[in-house]
View 1 (cartoon, rainbow, N blue to C red):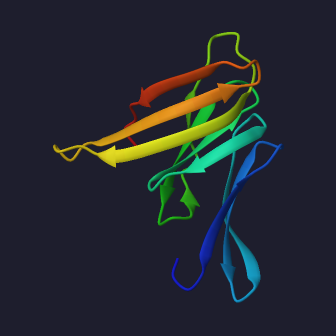
View 2 (view 1 turned 30 degrees about the horizontal axis):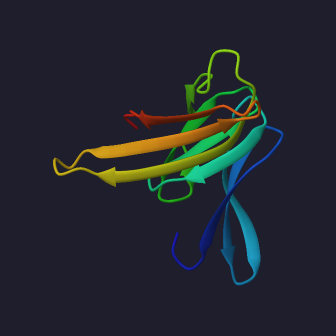
Length: 123
């Protein structure tokens, strides 16, 4: 996507969409439906991670900075089995000395629980 900026947004309808902003015009690129309202999201270099109202995370592989895989990976109830929706999310990723990608997450739920963990994904 050269010649513009890519914007990614999540919606209460459960949709995540990408758009190209170029010359003051906003054009839709890709969208995927997650099955639960999106409460927060983080864009990493190879994926979008969305925190949802059902308490789970959805990991959407990202191609060419803007195109979504149509089958996101679902991480069910990350803050406990009975936890309410994910209301905040932070992700830090890096490559270790062996060249393996490591991704650490912090999630906060509506009930006040906070969980820190390493997310192991093969995208």
